[in-house]
Length: 211
Image (cartoon, rainbow, N blue to C red; front, side):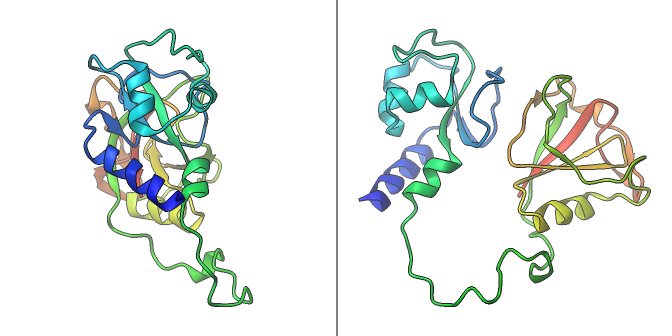
């Protein structure tokens, strides 16, 4: 059953300390964009054993991680995608709707404030080729009253999973994080324009949060 499959997958994740919601090592920029869980290859696990552990076919693993062949080569010291949002959606148990579609659930006005349980992912370095997050929510010239809660709320209302603040006055939202941690986490040291007591990234650096 599909529900059983996803349950087994989640159990495997609970026991695998090297899997995380964002890549913690170098990763292939061509990795599928809707990746939601990563395997950080820092130990002696083989590629084949990782595929078996998470129930991934060779075709899926290659599709999600184009740098990796169907024969699991080259298997490097880096982060690999082990589940995508598309696969999760396919394996979720189906339910019968109990209400009509008269009231859209995706309407911005129907959502309350964003949840407080955002996870701070740290300070990330901007990539000149791939943006850390896809959508800049701030006006031209930046937001003169930016705060971290304001940015989180803006991303939540537009159904983005990640929120990021940069240069003190910019709010970014995205469905994935396209980059890596800064080697120096204190690089995100620019005060927020709307709250001088907190930092909103820096020039070329972004504080990122996962909702």
